[in-house]
Structures are given as structure tokens and as C-alpha cells.
Image (cartoon, rainbow, N blue to C red; front, side, top):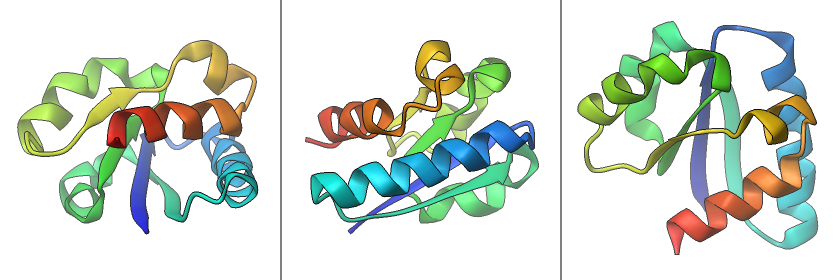
Length: 99
């Protein structure tokens, strides 16, 4: 099981995206523990993740996240995927990164 942590500015959109990602991962047979957190908890919650995702609104935190967790994949969710709440597309990107 992969542990996926999304960090955002604390908006409702990320929670909806997580719900869609969970549904997509189940449909695709990809076992994952997926949750969203405010960016303020990056230093305390990022350590538990296999992969760290940032919402596009906090793209400016990418360098900080990579510096905190140089051994982990960290990327910003594409604005189109995020805006459309396309959980399946995000899971597909995660699967590519974790191969």
C-alpha cells in the first residue's frame, strides 16, 4: 500500500479531489492511503508519505517540500487535473512516478 499525502492551502477542493482519488484508486486496483492536509503540517505529516503532492495554489512551496524530503517524490498537481477534480488522472500520474 502506498501512502499519498496532498498538501494545500486548506481548501475544500482538495478534499473533493481526495475523495475522487480514493474512488479511482479502488477502481484501478491501486492500494493507497490518501489524505489531504494543510501546508502548515508538511514538516510533521510529510515523513509518513511515499509521495507528496502539492495543490497548484501552493506551487511556491515545491522547493521547500523537496528540501524537507529529498528522498521522496514531490510534485505539484497540474491545475487542469486539480480544477476538474480528476482523481483518476492524478492516480495515473502517481503510478508513473512510483514505478
